[in-house]
Length: 435
Image 1 (tube, helix red, strand yellow):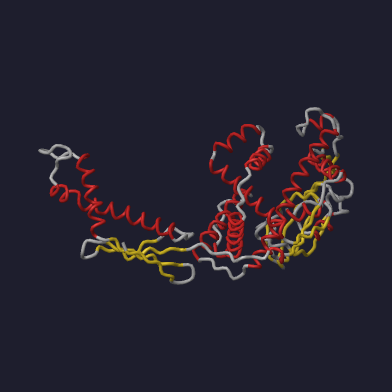
Image 2 (tube, rainbow, N blue to C red):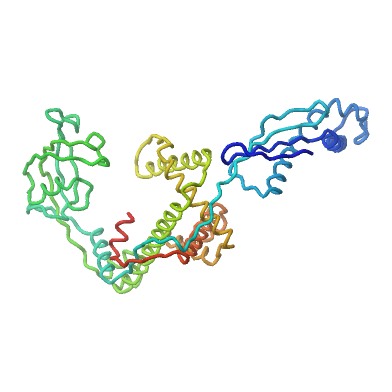
């Protein structure tokens, strides 16, 4: 059998193979012998069917099956013997029967990009670290109180933190932009709603029944499509105003958040544990991002095939559409995958770096950490033990956790090899930046 591998362009290789006739014929003969034991032809006992009859009836499909098996086997063996890592399923081209009964074909192979050696000691990055303080816990309790606060109608002046409803219309010059006619109501939690600061500042100090008008530039991400990204005149009046009354942190309040003892100190312990876990995950994510960004900078010239980029960017575009659905967008348009190409390249190189390090340093998945991660995920559900069992019974979910843990282990190893400078900052600064 003649086999050669030739470089074409970039990461492409051509595997050219010529299978001799005698090898094909011997395999076809064996295949026909197997067939003769399985089929029934009137007048002949199984296994005693003459070869010429077998050839006439089953010779052609038997040859096709044999050649198909040989092609697959030769490709797999050639990849293994030449220690090649491929990124795509091989594409068979130029396949043809030879005059002497042999068979030849060319298989296009797309190799995985190679990450060059990196001097990790030359890499220097900065990251932020923090810890959960009692003040952070108190802030979270205040947020929980706000979630359960009682709203009461007020005739006083509107202040930050109040809940108000305005009736408004938006104009571009003399043309009404939104709504099409009349006025529309909008509920605003002063200081927390996603409306422009100019409108919030204008509302503060007003009372129910009062009117105002002002020019506002709306952000591109504003929830009303007709107003997003435009500078408009807003005519509005205050139709409703409520002030919130925070509940006491008593036994009933504490139990409402799943702390059976009803004790405030136990609620604080649980909050601190949750915040510490969230902070740890956020800091790990930040270290991962800065470390991999620095390493990507070291391998800027690495070749990536267009097929890999297309596949990854298409997946990212689909993911963006699914996220839009989860956020309540009805029938979102599928975004153009080309808009995600740069992000796709980053993800591909990240994956290549992680795989390269895991192999070169022989880093194996720590299954103790896998279980810890699954238990951590399960705590966000009502029945954690059932979720843990479900993860271990679902290969796709388990594999996802294993990949996450492996990536974490590799990044941890990388962080120990580079110059990682840590700057201590407030808890809020890290967590707010991660949103």
